[in-house]
Image 1 (cartoon, rainbow, N blue to C red):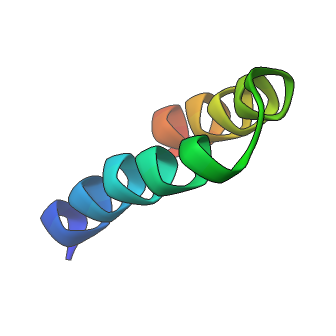
Image 2 (image 1 turned 180 degrees about the vertical axis):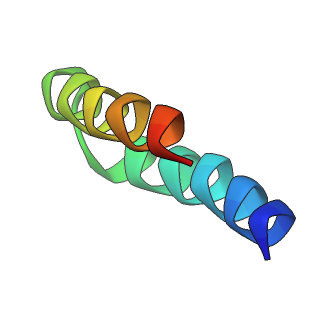
Length: 39
C-alpha cells in the first residue's frame, strides 16, 4: 500500500501541476513534504 501511495503522489502531483500554476504547486508540494515525513 505504501508503494501505491508513493506512486500515486508523484503522478497526481504531475497531473495537478499541469492544471495549477506554479504558485499553487508550491503549496501542494509543501503539503506533500509535510505528509511524507509522517509516513
